Length: 97
Image (cartoon, rainbow, N blue to C red; front, side, top):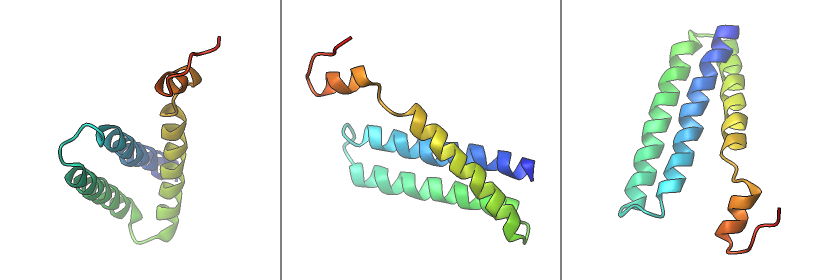
């Protein structure tokens, strides 16, 4: 079960890291709709294939992999948060240190 949990972590990093990259590039791309749909389809296909690979006919395998996938979501969310200083810079306000 530990291996299935560990397998869910890179799946989650791929899915949510790809989402983070997609959102960052939406403002600069010439085709935001194509980027959004293409990214969604690729991320969903890889994630679904990963879950089906691990499933092996048992829902318990999927549940443990989902726990690793969710842990990766927390990790990516934590790592992708802007710092206070960079958020203040984007708003055009001086930073207080």
